[in-house]
Image (cartoon, rainbow, N blue to C red; front, side, top):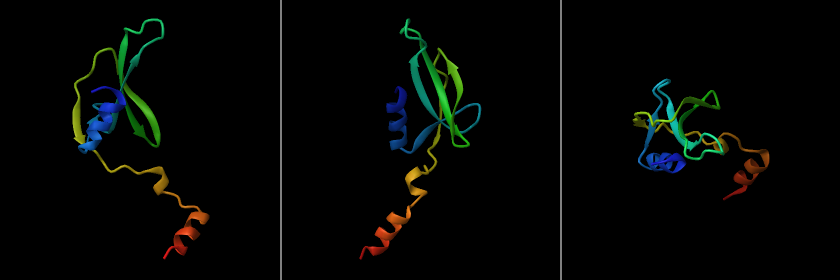
Length: 93
């Protein structure tokens, strides 16, 4: 299970990774440390804190991962409805 694909698979079964430092839901990312040496892989845990993505753990060794129930996600498009959209919705039978 690597990167976004593994995170998506966990969400499909309503689970997510628990960040050990913050106890918040986290995303696991894996990439190369630098362009010259692609064999140096690093793993990162990233959380959404106050609306911003924050890296909480970075290392060359995959940390032990704990899972937790995936909290409901608040989609950005669900928050706002423009006046044009509202008038269109109100005209529907």
